[in-house]
Length: 181
Image (cartoon, rainbow, N blue to C red; front, top):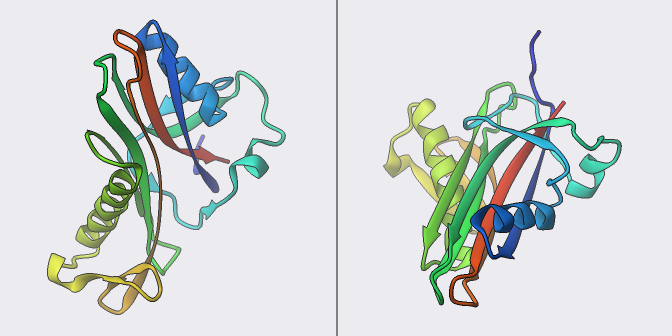
């Protein structure tokens, strides 16, 4: 049996609880994916897959259903600690080729910084598989897309950033690319 996802959506969430596991569950709940069995997969964006809105993708799914995800997760219970989780997507112009999904997490960065890093990582991974060196990979500000020689990469990212608000309270940030049939 072959499983090749055809739709992908991005989501994020933040959770707080007395335990690390509890904060993770609440972060998944905030992201809208806690009612599913999540199977983590590596970083390939399937050929011909479409990026869809989360609300549209969740319609018709059943609780307990198995969903494949590229998941970024970070937790801390250190008061004042800043944490961020992000995923980025890079899709080649030729949609018959696969793209990349990257996960990134960090301490001390903003949501925008983490999202940018995840997007950059995905674009760099895709560029390397296409045989393009770093000096040929440039950001096109007008199109808000990576320019790769004669190809333009479609990129997207999502991030969740927060800080631990109470001493000893666990805080978790998650970001995910969810792959669906």
